[in-house]
Length: 89
Image (tube, rainbow, N blue to C red; front, side, top):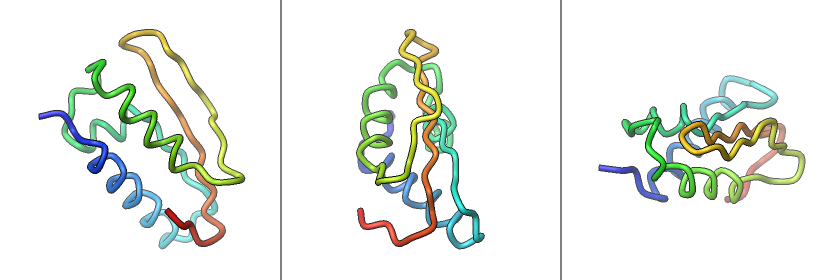
């Protein structure tokens, strides 16, 4: 079963929270790895729109897209989320 938008959002929040509690100033999140952590097939084209949409929607001022490719199976998004403040999502 493909992860839902809710699954992506909650997993991303967990990644951000864990990094923040470890005292990291930022965390880089790659869409394929996020998808794989949810047990999905990282080669699935179904993941691309949902995962990328959630990742960009969760960005706040100071966050940055480090890499973005849109080439079929290799579509990927790499976002640096800055953790030096309270996130309100």
